[in-house]
Image 1 (cartoon, helix red, strand yellow):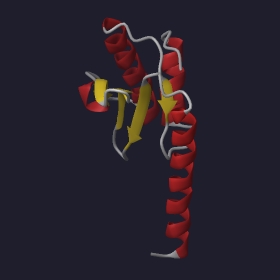
Image 2 (cartoon, rainbow, N blue to C red):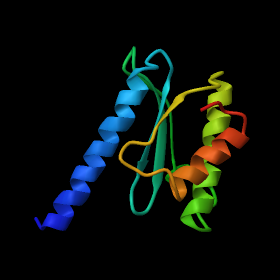
Image 3 (tube, rainbow, N blue to C red):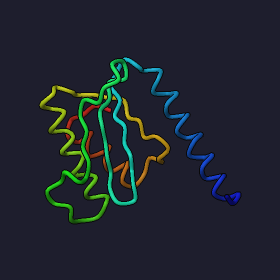
Image 4 (tube, rainbow, N blue to C red):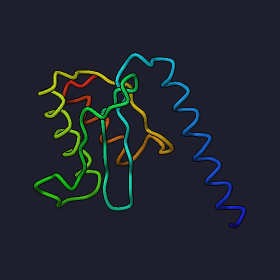
Length: 119
């Protein structure tokens, strides 16, 4: 590996550890974890105390997959809000993992907050 790739990987690892450390301080809440691939965005609500995934969504579930990736992230947030409402889940702590808070991730979370979900 080149030095540039190693530096980027180390930055991702440090960012993920920093985020996870902050999440553990509020461990009694559910965790909203996101995964961003090049093509799709995935999100799930996890109960860490039981070790179970309560709700999961992906862009593959959307009826209309047209538009930009950011627009699809907003639609995904609305879908997650609907599923959480059925299970009476109103809040979670956000686990962005190694991803920076911008672009698709930011649009997803802001749309989720707009739907009344507390993060």
